[in-house]
Image 1 (cartoon, rainbow, N blue to C red):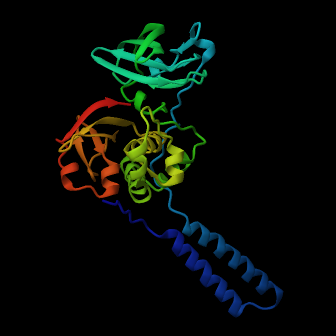
Image 2 (cartoon, one colour; image 1 turned 60 degrees about the vertical axis):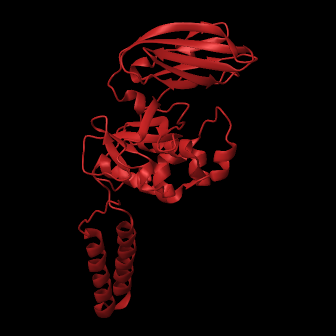
Image 3 (cartoon, rainbow, N blue to C red; image 1 turned 45 degrees about the horizontal axis):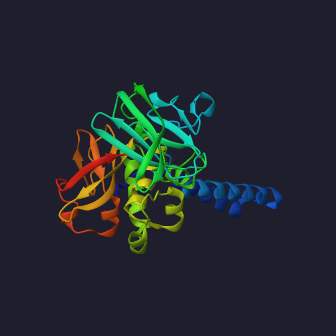
Amino acid sequence: MTIQMIRPQRMALRALLVLLLAVMLCLFGCGGGAADASETAASSVRENADDAAAPARGSYEAPPMATAEYHGDRASVNDQAVVDVSGVSKGYIAISAKAENRLKVQIVKGDMTYTYDLARDGTPSIYPLQCGNGSYYYSVLQNISGTKYARLTEGTVDVKLENEFVPFLRTSDYSKYTASSECVAKAAELTQSADTSLEAVGSIYEFLRENITYDKEKAKTVNLGYLPYPDETLSTGKGICFDYASLACAMLRSQGIPTKLVVGYVAPNDIYHAWNMFYTEETGWVTASFQAHKDWNRIDITFSAGGAPPEFVGSGDNYADVYYY
């Protein structure tokens, strides 16, 4: 479903009036003064034509982009691991470590355990604290042999989020972007004529559906532990479900729209899959999505772009959420 807006064509009318003025000056003017006036009018026509060609600015204004930063100087250091908890109220924890063998991070709250890979060269990673307020346990693990890991460091942190949406407004290892990313610039371009956040979602959604192609070969060869890069997906114009969901996250979040990257299963074939959910206070726009979890709307761009049969999108009863990022 594509949202179309009808606005008064004031700029086009203005350009037409200036054009008529230019013609009149050409017909009835005399000498150099007429020529100068005609040239001035023609210049004005060109400027106004350029303005008319540009999309009208909508009334939706995205808030300043939420950021997630690693502060090594504020971190807790334990030999090889550095844990920065300065951003927990904003919904994330940052960790870096150096080691010879493979590293993992585990973050636990209640009965939910999230396990991530961690670069072993000291490159910091951003992990969301997506389970709400409360006590989180974290640990950094190093592989010692086979599937066995030894703990490098561990700790707990009490989290009180600024609000429930902050974990879903920032970059993380699963959706990496910065203010200078191409996907952020594209999102701003796509949403500049939107009057509401819902129209902004619609513009981004339609762009992804029309311009990103499912990469069947990549789906066959992707390695365990693969992480998507939104700008790469945007540049190549293709990707797997993880790429679709990650790029959608980056574009929507950068425009101030809380968005979840969801990983789970889809019946009838129990496909392990990734998709999105977004939040907005507005209602009325639903396409290849359905209402779930109160005001959260689910969007499956992969199936929509690929023209999946109805049983894969259906009413949503066939989706089983497992993890949120």
